Image 1 (cartoon, protein in one colour):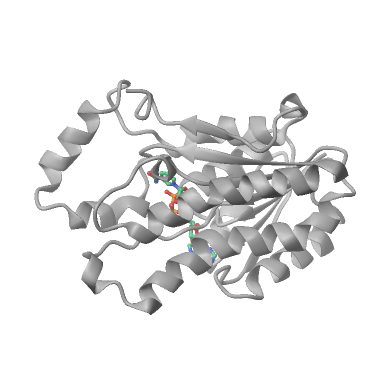
Image 2 (cartoon, helix red, strand yellow; image 1 turned 180 degrees about the vertical axis):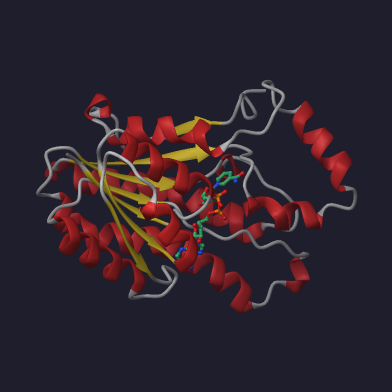
Length: 247
Ligand code: NAD
């Protein structure tokens, strides 16, 4: 039975991945900032066990505390799913250093510190993997969201460097690139649009499958990257976007 540490998973994509892991019998440790939603998530009946830690993963100590608590709860970790992020949206001149650094801390530094803290533990697994939730935003850019695009692109480089460094110990490192997924996460993007309904219609015209994804549409890709079926896959990205970046 595998153990996955999900960093940010009381909502949206992380929650769908948590549910999918548990459904197939894996044990899950959830580290998340939202206590009420975390308790709800781990209380659901499922084949795999679940525990949680309420913590702010954007702090220097948060990722290390999450790894230590997951290890204490289950005695091993096979998969790290670094998923939490924030989406800040503002015109360029309104980006204070604090706003910029807040995005960097959660979106880019958290996955780095989490992988750094977990690497010695993952070395003991015979199917170890790290998955960073990047975004198709790593391949594109939108006005008002410089930190989001910079941090998500940064994850691709971090993934490649760690894939090289951790391959000798048998740990694979990959990125998941969701396209437009229907969660509260994008609210700030929609608020930044002058005409939200027109912006939404324009978006759907750009997605060959004609709809935004649902969180469950992403879960299978995470399960695959974490599974032995992906044993020769490292340092790369898996896009889950209904064709958005194909055209
Ligand atoms: P969401 O808001 O539904 O979930 C984010 C989760 O992270 C929540 O459980 C939240 O409580 C947790 N979290 C936020 N800040 C935290 C912190 N400081 N410490 C600990 N936990 C924290 O969002 P989502 O849409 O599921 O997004 C999850 C990931 O998917 C993000 O990395 C996002 O960039 C990426 N993504 C989302 C989309 C999309 O369209 N929704 C597209 C591409 C990539």
